[in-house]
Image (cartoon, rainbow, N blue to C red; front, side, top):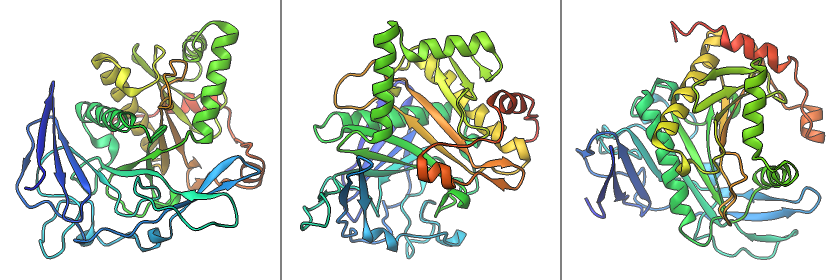
Length: 371
């Protein structure tokens, strides 16, 4: 298998491969990795990706344009699932057969690429869409959920996110990394197989930049890390904590924008996943799994959600930045979606139907026996 390299760190294993179309593939496992088929690609040729970015002068942010993404796979039948291990060599998928837990590969239809060519001048400030997009496949089980992974596998996923971030940080191009999962057709998912994505930007996007600015301002004014004061206040109140494992906890924040919005945080100031100790990472994994299970059990259906992993920008050391995961559930009541309507889209200010204290109490009371 061309280009294969193998690495073992502690109790985790990983192997690197090159796909027929030139893209990178990394397999991760809690046990030694065994690959029993050829490394596949849905096509032997790479997609001609020419992403472009244009500057929005009144919002102060970049807008990505990637016309080649119109041809990406959209809700295929199970027998043509591109994220499942290849079963028929005549119809190759993205992944080989074998023993491994998680897989990461370069997105075949990226919104950003490190090789983006310089575009012709546009009607606005236009430049190449430089960055990287990766797909993270959580499991070989096409019908599973992120929450179906074992505690050890979710802890491995946190290690994988940390590893990908560290790889991007080792270069001089990427300034910010966002790992996320979209789940459910309600939030625009095009593949049901449990997976997430990683976007690596050559700049610091507005949300990460604003978080950093406010965290630095808090530390300058109080002498304390924002996350330390936030965790202390939530523990003192107790009203909005969903689960507290000591080293990590989940909270419906007092300023929640979505009805059952849940944050997973380490109990001490940490800016990157790679800074977590083994015990902290394991606790973080258990709290994340608990939060996901509660959201599915809340109304007895698979909750559509967006999961985002917030880490410090990579342009410099930013110890003030609060590492955390935000879960945005899209159901506000059984069968009722939270849509981003006039005030959210037009002004950027959310309207919520329920106080966070009530939502947190409902999540705490969820029966997890049948999820």
